[in-house]
Length: 57
Image (cartoon, rainbow, N blue to C red; front, side, top):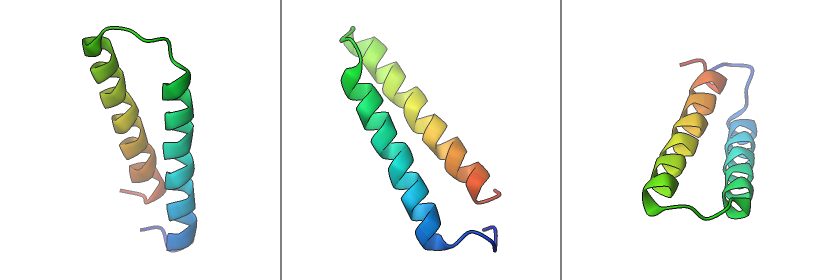
């Protein structure tokens, strides 16, 4: 992990990303189950990638 990034700060950033995802997800227009499943997968991957970049992995 990047020595300049405190674990508490990383946790706050991850929680913020997750909350933004839930806010966006909740505001979405309902589609088919397949569309929603694919969208959830894309959002999860985006959060994983953002965390990976934050920790320098």
